[in-house]
Image (cartoon, rainbow, N blue to C red; front, side):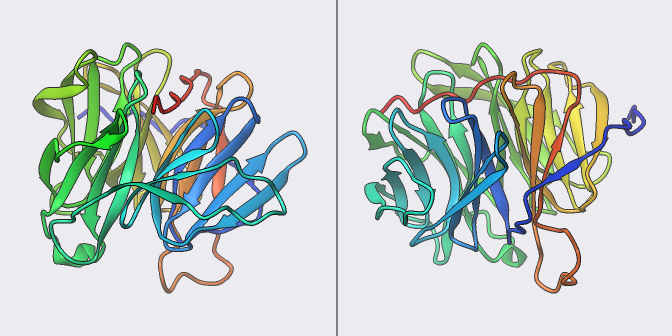
Length: 300
């Protein structure tokens, strides 16, 4: 496998927060702010670069991933899909309203990674929280038209890496469990919102496990190498062409943002037992010289 050298691009820490599992970073263009969730911390965070303001809101359940709505947010939580009205700094978060309930395949499961497709359908995968069990009970769900469909895919251990090509015709998905470590690509029917013809896109990363991902304006797939502190960029034909470094090992998910979508934000994980002074769980910003794509607003 061709392994490009690590690009000399500095990673700038934003804010002073350190999350247990920082996930689902999303750039909100109207607010010019970055949102993300700390899953075990049951917290939704916001950072606004114009004034470096940090805001946080407590949640009643773990939220694995989030998506923008016209007003407020959509959250994939432990018990299902919830909606949350617009948030205001200094005020507590309103109580989320459950829109759809999930019937998990096993006890102690939650939603993990997810996002909207280019048409605004919300996709999210589930996982057994104790990953040491390596149970393949994870399922992939779609929430659209006010309803959550039956699982579209199953047999996953840790569903991750959800992303869509610029034209929406390719869907990416990874299983980041140590026994899998694979990224798949699917053909995606933009009219029906259904994936098919799953095939291996990345058999394994040069180092680290595949975690959260993003797609840039060139159609390249950016994937976090968890436990390696690396971010990889793969071309649409599966060729590795760039590697970036982040100064913490457990990078979780990346997303493009800023006024011109030229900043790559990266969340990370603070594992139990991490030394108090370590920066694991921090959020970083890099400027890789390419632009991303705006996140799609949930269509309802």
